[in-house]
Image (cartoon, rainbow, N blue to C red; front, side, top):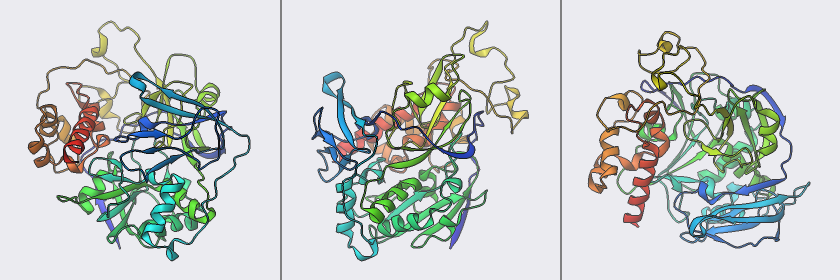
Length: 451
């Protein structure tokens, strides 16, 4: 069965620097890192010290809230640094990598022959469990819960996002093994969403134990929250688990080989990349050599782990985030202009007709990291509703979070959303309100209150 969902509200921000569909191996980095800051809501407990030798799959830390959830090394080597910040907040665990990766052996197995608890234990022990996230709260799923359904998204509509149909060509068997494992984790359905506006790889069309959904339309059509909202909405007290399709491959490799193989295919893209294309690398890779070799250095750059809407700003000598599948480089901006951000500019993008961009819907832009204004009083302008395809009042929800009104937040649908669902709202917001940060703070507060 295949449903077709057409998203009407939203907008595509077309940027220069799209990755050409050429796959190459990225050079091996000297170091790799796991960053606890990638995981909202955890209390990390480090179990290694600087100088310890580890293999790929060796436990580096675990969550004190859910001790079964472990975070393991993506490579073998030596623990080079356990970096902490203010109040000893854990920021990074850096591994100095071996030239040849050695793996912990968790034992290969056919997920169809295992029970639910055996599958969960293998996923937790090997470190692949953190790929499984849940709604509400958009945090790592609790392995003791039983979700009503699982959503796997193979469609990413964010600017310059990787094309999963290209990435998954020839990966059908491995993907199916991961799906077989996930199907054992719920008594409900496993939903797989793909891009309905383009050809779909047979790895997806021939997948078993899933309900296939085709989705089309402007961003955020690829957000898993949009899919849940339309295909299996979350009710009171219910939980839905979510994964990215590439993470299903990692789970498939675990059961195929018994190893935590953190290989992933990413795009290195953006207008400040000289030759954007697809690269095979490893989770947590150091980005210094990649950006030094591939980025243009004719001006100051903004380096991002992830996409320009929801990714994290990193240094040139930074690390690929746990949930990121692209590295992006764009101009930082900030050059002085006679009339500031209101200077007329035909190269400027806007969803409003105040700029000429609406006359050129297919044009690709070289945008920078400037805000083009400062934070102002938060007023109702109906801008959010144009790019927010939920049956939710987004402005009212943001205001309810800002005043800590829990009952109103619940009534307005906060359990259905995640910060990424408000990324476009930030782009179009005249008031320059940091909506994603506000939503994350609201979800964290609710989770604390309900625990």
